[in-house]
Length: 524
Image (cartoon, rainbow, N blue to C red; front, side, top):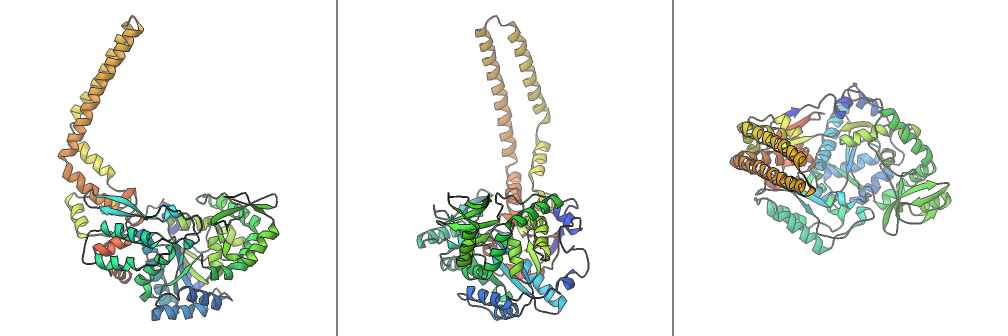
């Protein structure tokens, strides 16, 4: 597998982060020995309990030898490389897979470097309730050469954590059928169809089973943030966070000011959710009482504390307290996050300081683009720069290509014609002796300008038509390498990649890549 790299702009956030420009993290990536230093952190006293909770969560899976070995290591207090993601439809989108690959690759590299077992852990963000963010996938339409959105076949919405949402058998079957029908049929399509039809109906369970099948041989450990048994283990931390929510909120705001970064937007000052009447609702404190975001209920501090004590599964973290909870649960060597996550961890540095917790190494996940033979040939045919296409797309090149082929003199004449018409008719308007005549002149000008505009549009249509093949190829390249105006991994679906290329594609990636902050382009 041939690999090339695309470096970040030094002035981009990741460029600045890699260079150590920010001081809102406890470890600077460019400093030597950071993993050895972080490895000195003592294990949590609850490591045995956490290992048992996770083993119970994974008990419905057929665990590999390496997974069982990693669970034992976790119980013994070994450090982890951890990252998480919302449960997208059939693991949508592709960067979810890249985050998992990042976790596995970094854990393997550091296991060798440190001479000890580092455990790869993937945190399924099942407590999230924004169903619209996960209920769809984008699939490539070959005939239209563009990405099209496929939504799950249900009209119901999940207002509570998505881990509590189940599809019906009919909804799952319809979704699988619609998904498979939009794939390019290969020798692997039937295998994928069979696997999807056997998935559980629970939203995060289907996600969990797919990930397990793909990565079980790498010892990947899975946990759902909404797991009830895990929430029992978190109870003391939830109580502490609730008791200190004012200080946490003040530290959060201080951290944003220090970093001069405000990517986290939230309307709560408690930074916890509570599930009431089947809805996950933010808590807010006003004058000593606690109010919910989607109902009229309110509570005293003592009532909330009692509810956490007796029903911790009804409470969950928001974006401000989730990283701290993660760190208080796991003995973390490194946290793996996307660019946005890396930024907001920096904004939370003062929250960690207040909690007297050191922030783990915050490592940007691997960023990967796949380049197949057809895309490579098209790039070569039109002499298009790979790095530019991957990061910025082809809109600028497409516009430039059309401008080069356009009749510039004709466009200039049409522009001048418009100017002359407006000038001449303005003179006529000055000569009009009545309102009626003014209206006639204005209507006549409008008619002529409409005809000029029609000619411009007709010429543009003809221009596009005679360059149809080139523009179609440009659209095809854009859809594959810079879809929907962004990186390939933010739109393309991992199962489409498995269907089109190889069921072992991601195994090949794990065996081929090494950890780097550069964007990697893999030729497949």
